[in-house]
Image (cartoon, rainbow, N blue to C red; front, side, top):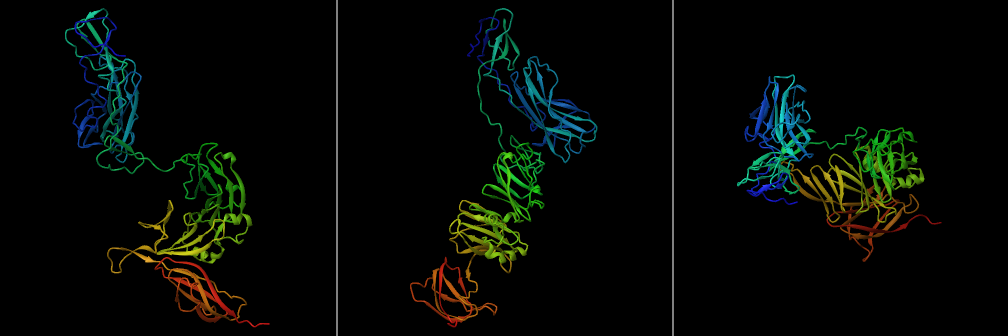
Length: 613
């Protein structure tokens, strides 16, 4: 509601309320010189504490209690107005230097006063800081509620020495939140004299604090809180002009402008979290291998691994083939598959642990967690024999039953024997499963390409002239990291970009090295083994610069003819003549990488020289 303005020489009844013509200055919302950066002004020092220049939390000055002294309190002179029943929060920073834990201490406190400046009860004290080993500044804070009869409060810092009188203790950076600029909009004045009286000819000096009074001729006015609310926007937290020196320990603080940052640990602190690297995410939970069991977090809360009826574990070690530790995990059609060295288990997952169940267990194991990848509606994994899929393995219960990785088993087994740690991925944009074996200077990659999902694909082998340490897929692009370099796989590029160090030293240079292509057939009998076949010519269909060689002596270390440059597509013209004879033949196509290339078909024209009956 709106109150009338004070008028001179006016008769006022007890209980009348007015607002001043000339408003008193508003009360403070922040403490004066809370960081001691303006000297010792603005503080009342009690006991043995003193202003100290030469050290501080946010500047070069602070409050100090020297050694060999019991202690004291410094109370800031700022009168902070807080409505009755509302709260104020005060904080400060304490530093104990070389004092042992518990020998010295400090805290922040809030003291309430009535309208006659008399303290009301004991101060509200913050948490006691009594351990500052390592020279850390620690925070003390308190939240206090304005009691009935309080007109304002003052915040302060107390420093105390209990047993160790040989080391100083410091306090700094007093801050408050929750105060109210009570004037001019939120104060009015009520007549409290016992009888009617006239106001003076001149306006009195209105008190700026709730509950205080002023005599106006025959009228006595008391400052009260009005019902009017005015909102004032002001920045509470503003960072500094330069980046602060960030602390490295959890729980430590750094002041950045008016913002106080606290370092926190990004680790999951729950003791039931295994913190292993064998992890899968499904059904709004995180699953993590823990020896012979698989623990899982609470639903949509990966920080919680202990809540009853939400977090828990899968007892894989109590099921068939569960005696070995879980070494790899993957997802197969929304089900979890934990692998160990001897077998895998198939678990149904659900947000409700009561609906989780073991579906199957098969003696087909894997220990290569990072080689696993979900491909289409299947799961590719690396077993000791080679690449296998869960779909074929589960339906056949036989590692050798026509699985996709069988054609390259000897190559994969040889790569595994080198000790390289394999990395597996599915590249959806290309429809490819990659199995990478990083070595000391390069990386060999076995690539399974699927032209049609669900149909049989074909294996290729890529050789990168750098060590692939990690990979990521963003959009339709695949990125490979090698040291400080990140490479993007692009089918339109004809070479690998590598970093080369000149032989005589100097600055490393980056160059693009074209990558050639090689297609080689196995030795083929084209009929009865051991019988000589005569080749007259051949046709090839494709694109790109290609050379062809023919293997003619399988028993002589695989003897091949010299590479012969041919057109990429010979079908429009005549057959390419190639007169040679051998019992078994092999064909080798080499693309030099100078342009994009593709092979589609190869046709041999030959005559079988076997005797006729």
